[in-house]
Amino acid sequence: MPLKKSEIDHFKKRLLDLRAQIMQAIEGSKKEVTAPDEAKGYSQHSADEGTDDFVKQINLEVTNKEFGLLRQIDRALEKIEEGTYGVCDITEEEIPVKRLEAIPYATMTVKAQEKFEKGLL
Image (cartoon, rainbow, N blue to C red; front, side, top):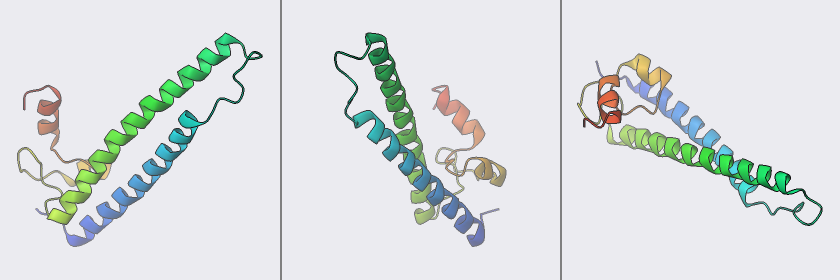
């Protein structure tokens, strides 16, 4: 059964809220990674510099994951605009509402997602 307009509006709001949260997190990470290292110099121990570099690397990896999630959210929002939200991109079957409640940016059914991740699609 296709999603009702009220359900689509509900998911759109959730997606937009999630998108705003992720954008805020990306901005925070970007500031941390690009901030100049004021403490670097002769007085800082080399182990501290290594720790700082490690933290920056972790922030970059987290930011990359957030960008991936952002792409998924944007795709779900595109599907809302296209009128195909709640329909699997691969099988064109309806995505169960419970899955959308858990993962509002889901664009595939669980079966299709599993096949996709295993490289079978």
